[in-house]
Image: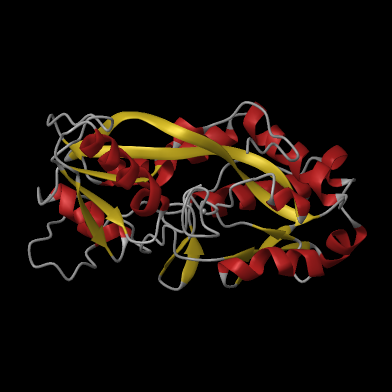
Amino acid sequence: MRFHRSNRSHGLRLMGVVAAAAAAVTVVAGCSNDDESEGTGTDIGPISVDVSKVDDIAAGLPQKVTQAGKLVVGVNVPYSPNEFKSDGKIIGFDVDVVNAVAKVLGVTAEYREADFAKIIPAVQAGTFDMGMSSFTDTKEREKQVDFVTYYSAGIQWAQQKDKAIDPNNACGKKVAVQADTISATDDVPGKSKACTDAGKPAISIQKYDSQDEATNALVLGKVDAMSADSPVTAYAIKKSKGKIEAAGDIFESAPYGYPVAKSSPLAPVLQKAVQYLIDNGQFKEIATHWGVEAGLIEKSLINGAIN
């Protein structure tokens, strides 16, 4: 979770900066350096939903945005499936949603890349109208900016098909994680300590530089399970074409949100646009396309942090 990405963990990006590779599942994308990797599907591409400008909502846009005819959006990639590059173009679940939000508002979205840690300061300074980079809405961050929530993310384990793993009793098992994510620094180490405290074997934590490598390890049977942000895991499962599946429920859920300047009139406008997409089914259509529908919410909030 990008906190969950700010520190590269759930508290981190939620979870951290899971810098998932642009093709997320190497196994699927064909960008692995592992000679044993095998194709398991095709990449999921952008989807454009049927939605038009809603004048009553668009009327509340700040004059700056209306005059420019665009929302300037700060983004950090890669973090598949939320935001990543394909053929040099930024795509993903988050991108499709913000593009739909822009349609509701009668403007276009202009994406500008930035270091993750620099996006909120740039929003505060007015360089970006908003941020879009799997930000976890936290009480601490709400001191700096306002957030418009749109999704609920947590930690989700995956296992090989029909090879059951209990995340709360994985003692002695091999578990893949991306280095420097919440899964690597908090989740799996905490579960491993619970094992050793109970006199059981520790979990063998297998750290990889990228999420695609961690996913490959599971698909190829090099590990027994993997731990990652719930949308990352859901995307990997969808792309694996049945080779891996969810292990247990999503836990430690927290809201993703779009950061905007504190007290900006843009916040309520974005909230209404997101809610419009939720109420009319376009949001679900986008989430289902990317395989991340498990995190759908019923109500978008301004500053909905849990912690």
